[in-house]
Structures are given as C-alpha cells and as structure tokens.
Image (cartoon, rainbow, N blue to C red; front, top):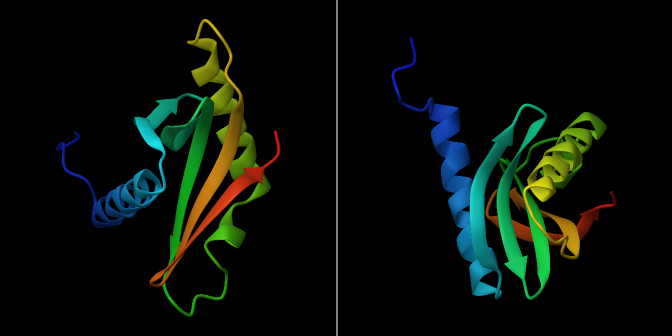
Amino acid sequence: MWSGRLSQPQERGKSWEEAARVYLERHGLVMIESNFRCKLGEIDLVMRDGATLVFVEVRQRAAGSQVSAAASITPAKIRRLVRAAQVYLQRLQRLPPCRFDVVAIDGRSVEWIRNAIEA
C-alpha cells in the first residue's frame, strides 16, 4: 500500500527539479507543468520560452561521478521522453514549435543544454 510519502531519492529528485525550474525561470522561461506522466514516459518540466514549448529533462550527478549528468541520458530514456512529449502534444489543439532541453547538474555546476535531443 502506498503511504503517500516520497522515498529519499524521489525527494532529492524533486528538489533538483525545483532548482532547475527556478534556474530556467530566471532565464525567462515560464512554467507550464511539472512531472507530466503517461504510460509511455515522464517529462520533468514543461515550460514555455516565448512561443516555443520546451520539454525539460533534469539530470543530477554528484561531483566526481564517472558519468556526467548529461551523459547519463540513455537512448531508451530519450525514446520515453519523445513518446511522452507526443502524448502531451495530442492534448493541444494547435502544435507550437517545440524543443527538448536538458538541465544537467554535476555537483554544484549547472549546465542548460538547449535542443539537447533531436526528435
């Protein structure tokens, strides 16, 4: 039975997503939705950059990790992101320009990678 509480890794993930949201809002993006989930995948943040709809994947790794946060995105993860975005877009009457961005957090370093995934 689900207790309604998040696990420790889920709590940390939520805090990194919140930090990414604040970072992107400081750079002019507008929050639309967080943690969009469907059977095919999940999108951490859906934001707007002007007229462009931005699907954001947030990745975090501790400083000194062997694999960087950005490099930790596997082809399977990319497929799930694209499929989830397709489901999200089916809800809209009009298709806006879209892109996939990544906010990669390595230790205390934040990197915003625009157009990180070609779909």
